[in-house]
Length: 257
Image (cartoon, rainbow, N blue to C red):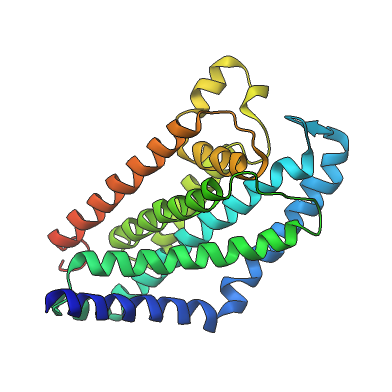
C-alpha cells in the first residue's frame, strides 16, 4: 500500500513541476534560449572566426555541446531551488512532510521536475545550435545518459540550496558565486589542453569539467578527460548529494525550525 501511495505522490509532484514549467514557459524556456543564442552569436560567430579550430573542430562546433550542457545545468538547478523554496515559503512542505509519502518521494519528485526542465531547455538550445553549426551525435547513449546524470546532480544541489535558504536572496547566492564561475571554468569555451600544466590540474577539481567533456565526447567524439572517470565522478556526486538531501530532510533542517 505504501508503494502505491508513494507512486501516486511521486506522479503528482512531477506533474505539478512539469505543469509549472510549461505554464510559465516565458520565464523558464525563453530566457535561456535567448541567452544561448547570444552566446552563439558573440562567442561562436564573432570571436570564433578569430580563434579558428579547436581540437580539430570549428570553434562554433566545439563550444556548442558546452553551451547546451551549461543551459541544462543552470536550469535544472534553478528549477528545483526556486520550486522547493517556494513550497517552504508558502508552507506546502509541512503538508508533504506530515503526509504518508516518504521523504525520498519528495526529493525524487522535485529532482525529476528539475531534470525535465533541464532536458527541455537543452532540446531548445540544441535546435538553436543547429542554426549556427552542424552537430552529429557520435555516441547517443553517452550523450543522453550524461545529460540525465548532470541535470540530476544539479537538481539535487538546488534542493540542498533550497533547504538551507532562509529568504529569497539566499537562492541566488550559490548560482551567482559558485555555479556561474564553475561553469565558465568548466571547459565550455576552451580545451584545458591550452592551459599551463598547473591550471590543468586545478581544473580537474571542477565537476562541471567532467560533465561538459563527457557530453562533448558523446556529440563530437573528443574529450580532454577519461570518459569512464567522468562517469565515476558524476555518479559519485549523485549518490552523495541524494544522501545529503535525505539526511537534511529526515532531520527537518530548515523546515521544522
